[in-house]
Length: 186
Ligand code: SF4
Image (tube, rainbow, N blue to C red; front, side, top):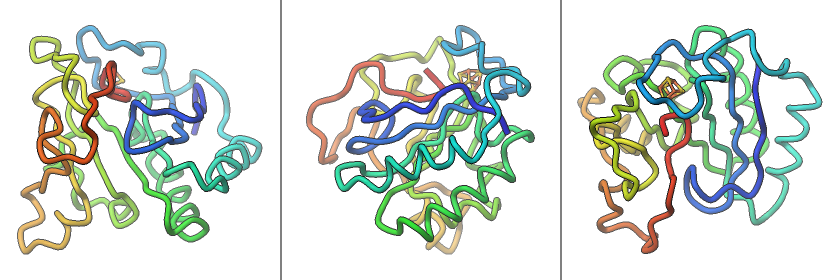
């Protein structure tokens, strides 16, 4: 698995202050993607033990709410297994920290992935420039959904996602909508 960056104290890709892992590899090729440099799974840097420790160092801090996996696409075949392993380790070491995942894939294709048991929130779907709206909460285009994974998986029909928040944060605890929110999908 390879990555481009680990950003710290990030406020734009999930609740609170977060550490964000920007992975290499994406095959969605969304028109006007902001991060085409991340498409190549051979790009960036090897995700080694030093990178893992850098993330753990952030998660040790009380004021860090959790980790967001973005990219690129964390669910690209080059990443999936290692992302799952890292999530498992984080869930065990830091049970109070939240795990967010941005992917260009849609919930209907990924709800059966075993890693979902570790994930709190998924932002799903490709970035669609004709549905772009800078005021959307945590996402770049209106087709994407911010999904409460654990509430969804607790339902009888797990194929129907339970939304974590509305498009503009209706009934959501954050009242100020961050600009440029949206992780891998703009
Ligand atoms: S917007 Fe996200 S899912 Fe789409 S091509 Fe770019 S990195 Fe991939």
